[in-house]
Structures are given as C-alpha cells and as structure tokens.
Image 1 (cartoon, one colour):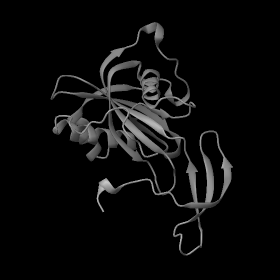
Image 2 (cartoon, one colour):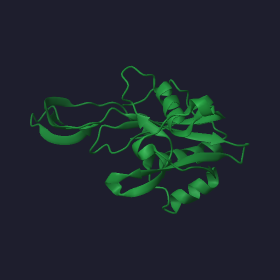
Image 3 (spheres, one colour):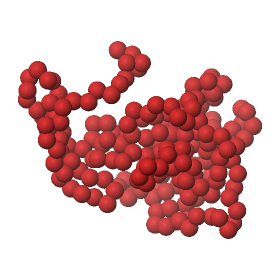
Length: 209
C-alpha cells in the first residue's frame, strides 16, 4: 500500500440517524456494512461537516518568505491559538477558491493574485467527515480602508502577525502552534519551498471529500 493507492472506498450505509442537529455540525449515527460478505452492520457516530478551506498567505523575497498568522480564541480547548485564515464551505454552490479568497478578505483584509493548492487532509477522520484544503496565497495586496470587513464574535480584534517561514516551522516543532491547518500548512509550505515549489498543485486539482 502506497499513498498513490488512497481512494474513495465508500461502504454500504444500511441506515442513518441524526442524533443532534447543531448550528454548524450535526451528530449522526450510521449503520454501515464494512464487509459485504458478513452482512453484519456496525454503528459509527460522527460529526457531519460541510468541509472547509484554509489559506497560508505568504509574502517576501525568495528564501525570506513570511507567513501570516492570526490569533483566535477557541472555546472547546479554552485557548488562544495561532492559526491561518480559514472558513467553512457553508455557501451552497460556492467555488472552493472563491471561498478561500472570501475568507482571506474577511479575516485578513487581503487579496491574492496567485493561488495554489498546498495540501488536503481530513481533520479527524475517525470522528468527523470534515475535509480541509489548504491553499497557498501569494502576490498579496491590502484592501482599502473603506472595504475592510466588519468582524464579529471570536474574529473581533484578532491579532495578525507576519512570521518568517523558518520561525513558523520552529514554533510548530516547539509546540507553540496547535491549530491543525496552521501546522499542516506551515510544514507543507516548508517542504514545498525546499523543492522549489514543485509539489504545488493547480487550484482545480481533485479533492477527496
């Protein structure tokens, strides 16, 4: 088995029950037949998630790139976390890249002229259906003062800092960055830079979700 063998391999769902309907996520229980031969379904409970996009915004000259980090309060873990801009795919029919551009604008007051796919991953595949795509956004411009997005709740007054990519990698290894999109995005960007950005994919690349 190699990473090239990863594929969609759905199993038969015999029955599905919504245990709780939430504001953002639902908790569901599926009776799923894992082995078509034995005929005995098992119950698996998980969060039904619409999916999300995250953006590693990058600026700077080659070899001296900086990445944007934002700090946001996350109540489930009772902590202020350093993260990268991100948001749910909760607008019906919205293009993935357009969703990423919207989140970059809303959370960081930035627009990007260059977009690439950095990495895709499932956040918690044993307990959630969330699939997340991290984009690399470059050639950035600030929006005008009259265009800035009015942020609310946890997004209000979020600190924004630019950090050299190497320092961000060090912060990940030192346990100072815990947000999964930031961890995955920063390490993937460092790996891609070490390969002269060859691993980057086009924004229309296939996405297992």
